[in-house]
Image 1 (cartoon, one colour):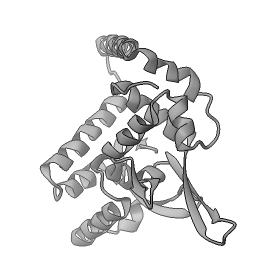
Image 2 (spheres, rainbow, N blue to C red; image 1 turned 90 degrees about the vertical axis):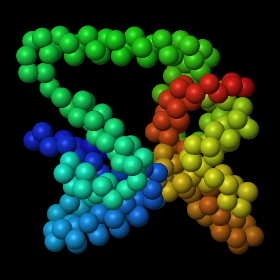
Image 3 (tube, rainbow, N blue to C red; image 1 turned 180 degrees about the vertical axis):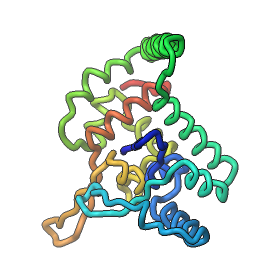
Length: 224
């Protein structure tokens, strides 16, 4: 997902807002369209087309900081805080040092962050081994393949995915939530079985495997 910053203007997409707030993308778009109607502004100026996981053209909105803040004022305090924290993270990423002392301070901060990350990976122990594996993932993978790749027990992996609102059971099958499909972490393949019945099968994308590996590294999940 892109978080464009043009001419020093910080923006957030409707898809990212949906991901941060755990709301469905279609509901966030509805909220945005309602807000622009109340503001008597043209929402189409903020729209753009993207291709979803099934290669269909879909619409998302790219909001500047002011409109993002205006949107989340109608959300709960918890959701507002999530968006505000994410905006602050984006602002930090796009901050450019203006003086030599600032540049030196930024370099020192990056060095500290790198050391902290290395320490976390060391503490994670065997979980750090996933790094050499998932970077080589070039195709779609099933649930068992990913669990084996990340060296996580299947039952623990299933519970982790459900507890973190990443996947849920539908007709006995693990199914990803729509916001994670929109984010490119899963692809849903559809087809027709030999008996004529239609089926849908969720597969993890390399991007999804990488994202999950990062989450698991921060969690104390038992390895298989």
